[in-house]
Length: 256
Image 1 (cartoon, rainbow, N blue to C red):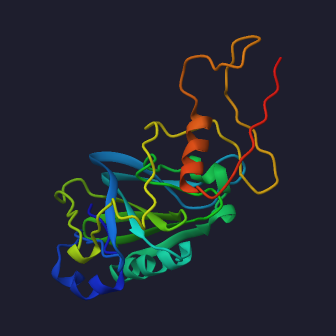
Image 2 (image 1 turned 90 degrees about the vertical axis):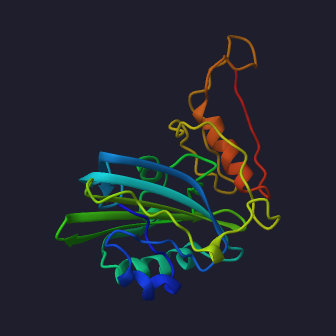
């Protein structure tokens, strides 16, 4: 399955492309920042919000293509980022199945219950993201796509996942040249590399004036030094702070 044509400028040329060649065009300077491809795989497509301890899903099978982009988007809201992508998906024949926004999706639980590429390629602000799942039925079976969009101070983040038949050829990952920008551009907030594993321990919401707990930290008895190991909650906190450099946090610890 290929990558979706996202942006009104490419809609007119869709009919001239192969059935699954959906070319990204964001109408804004963008650069691909992460990807994952599997020729034959199964993928749980979210079809509803986190509720009762789980996310309802449909299990899709076939070629899975997942790509993330960073967009130069100062001042744009997540809705402004999603809306043209949603409209072009509809123009390509996809019918929305489920759409949600941040807390309506399930906040932290939905974000970490959803398959998302790791930082810094794909950044998701737990309080400001949108998700869309859509499908289209054709002669080759059912094709699925999901979009999740978020942002930092002046950078938009988009992840597109497509799931389709495994025998339909390699995805067309070409990007319109007008949508490419130099990732060293000073207007774009680049996030330093973080551990590839998706953080699972963090349960904080980082709302102003409200406390949040960093779980899973192991200290030697009677000492302030962390034991050796990987701490997902600290990696996630670091990524959030790098994406929100204007913010300040206060760390408070209690010993045994």
